[in-house]
Amino acid sequence: MAQYSKGDTPVAIVDDQNLTSRLWERSAAGDARQILRWSVDGQWRGMDWPQLAARVRGVAAGLIALGIQPGDRVALMSNTRVEWTVADLAILSAGAVTVPLYETSSVEQCAWILSDSGAKAAIVASADQAKQMDAAREGAANQDDFGVFVLDDGGLDALAERGDTNTAEQVAQRVAATTSDDHASVIYTSGTTGNPKGCLLTHGNVLSTARQTETIMPELFGPDESTLMFLPLAHVFGRIGQFACLESNTELGFARSVETLVDDLATFRPTFLLSVPRVFEKVFNAAQRKAEGPKRKVFDFAVATSREWATAPHPGPVTNLKRAVADRLVYRKLRAALGGRVRYCVSGGAPLAEHLAHFFNAGGITLLEAYGLTETSAASALNSPSKRRLGTVGRPNAGSEFRVAADGELLQRGPGVFTGYWKNPKATAEVLDDDGWFHTGDLGAIDDDGYIKITGRKKEIIVTAGGKNVAPAVLEERLKSYRLVSQAVVVGDNRAFVAALVTLEPDELAAFAKEHELSGSPAELAENQTVRAEVDKAVEHANQAVSKAESIRKVAVLPRDFTIEHGEMTPTLKLKRSAITEHFADEIEGLYR
Image 1 (cartoon, rainbow, N blue to C red):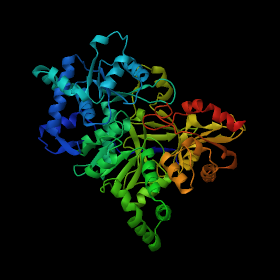
Image 2: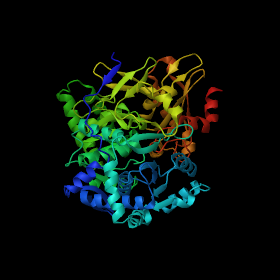
Image 3: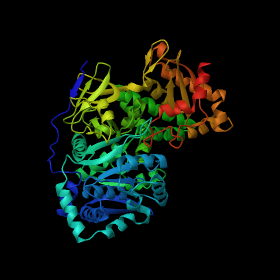
Image 4: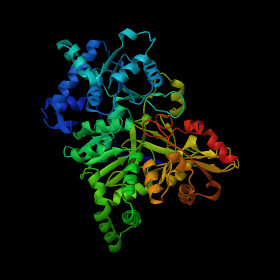
């Protein structure tokens, strides 16, 4: 089994190129194609390259007039919207560094990031977020010199009004002076424990990943393609998607909100989507939930057919006929729900369950898994449409190298790897060795063709009291593949056996209760024996993937789901295990009494 893999020749990046270079090139050429689109009162509006350049120039000039110097940090806290991209490009065009904050960040988190980054100003979405900034900066030394600009109140216009002819000329000078080695962003990892660390990414880090992504996936990106952005742009995955679209002249649309996503997909009609596995799970669960009564057998037939079609080396006429029937009855509804034109979806940020890949692929939507971290500028390994291997995250990006250490940890180096953690050399030295290898913290394997498979997180390995090492990922993914299960966390470190905490999918639980004539609140239903019996089936299914020593012996069904608000999930929907085990310590102890 190979333990090393390297991508092809990297995309060339000239030293004086930066993340705004394409903007100025295309606007100077008078490219009148709409590059950004957003919805207002149900009507889609657009902005072409010259219009975008004029808007960015004005806001950047305002930042310079405000006193922002090259290398200064500017905080950007907002939901995903067109103004986010304009503000990001303006900050970079002023020679400054963007510091993204999630719109769900608490006052305490804002205070830490603003203090640690030394941000000189902030652009926020709403008045409430402005109040958060004020509270976060209470008592700060430069409180009076810190400007907060609110998008909902015309904050970009207010910035642009500060600029003049002189500062507009300075924008061009700063753009020309910005090279690929200059810092573009300090992105704070959401973290599962402690204060987040600021990952320093250069223009070259982000630019190389964006250009390699469009090169590896030419079927997704280009002037005839489009995507609808609903991922948080504060997260590196969404950010790389933004720049990959700008680099490739791909139309970038912005959903109004997650609540309006279905309507926005129907009217915008993108050709590809970028998302995290949790969203694909919700799409699958919603389709499953709608299939009540006799329709449920039809849906189950479609799921079984997707597995059969995906796993057959050469699907025969019977399998193809089944797929055609399933397409007419189920799959075409899936495509319609995504707007009718989506051909590809890219999944990143967490492991993708195999049954989801089967279902989408059989439905005519190629679901491609990718891999990357904030420290690697997001996607550092990709499955391309023409060269994909199910169950892997693909092969390394151009110029990137991967190898597996003796303890199974995946190491990476290449043009996308960050320069270190902001003001934290100790933490940097812990993950970046002298040879430039970044220690990802993920466990993985590389096959003979260079495809990479992620098998778990190094820190999440459970060692039972009997000395058995257990990787929880495969058990948790299998549990979540069952209809009632929303989230699952496997426990058992230094314990006599492996157990699990399980939460229930609210809508699916309601449908299940109706089918079985059950009543009660979600917490009461979690204790119901019929519901427990269904969860036991999920446990039995999960245990089939592991040895007896690794199998789940007991399970606690929790009365509520894990949430961002309770601090149990990151804004990108990753579980915070330390918070979960702390919040549900009594339930865990109960499993071992």
